[in-house]
Image 1 (tube, rainbow, N blue to C red):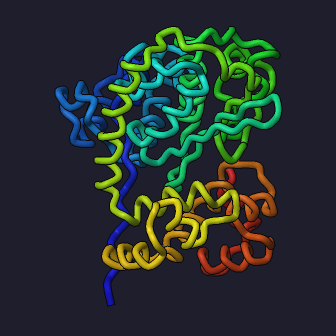
Image 2: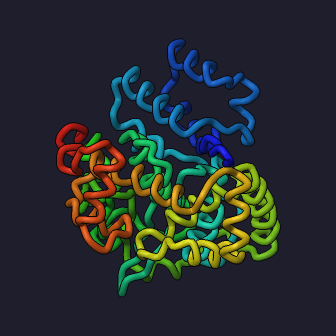
Length: 345
């Protein structure tokens, strides 16, 4: 029997730390923590450097604690600079309109964060930009603030998205339960901020998607997207087939269609080929699906205010009882309610 290989840990681009360091003036303790991750001065300046996802979350929490500033993620997101996100930013800002820019960012988000899955949905007159984490690593509030604030900042930087008003930010969703800066939230996000949500999201009028990008240039876009695609494929190759299956399973769970057949179809291969390639890595589709569900269940229960029924639906269970039975198996007998009582922040 083939022994299962340990799952490869998701990584983040070191570029995501740059806006934090610019405003934080890190002290010796924090610098020591960064060095402890094996990052030297030259590595910190190298956009190709990648860091473990869990270690970066711990580092951000340490940064908040040492600075005494819980709003540092919001401030970092509001002060991102042109070029911070390198080739992905250059490809996105040269698209025709905001819809194309967001689409470009969603396709190559793994260049910045392998654990992130970004989607854009249009529901009537609303557009929903959603940022989900699929590796089960708990997100610190500073990270949640940063991803939404930086998305809005870049939208305003490269398209004529107006400042916050009831007509611009319909809603902002954040995964943590308590605000880090209520006044800052109102100034940056507007009045309707929902906390304790399963994912970070920006909900805005769909007509903004047609706004032209100020630097639209199809030739430059093509060149940078070609480079982004090469880099993204290289990263996916390092993930292995099991890592790619995990990404697809996560993306398909909400629609309730994370079967092996649907995953194989999304990856443009037959079920038999997918099964054979997973077996070569000591993995199976059912094991990956089960692991993703268990990690997301514990994340939702500890980080969000969703009901158990809603969580069961998000994980692709048709009936809450099936989710309860699976959760007892994952936790050696604990119920979802018991787990939430013990771990809710």
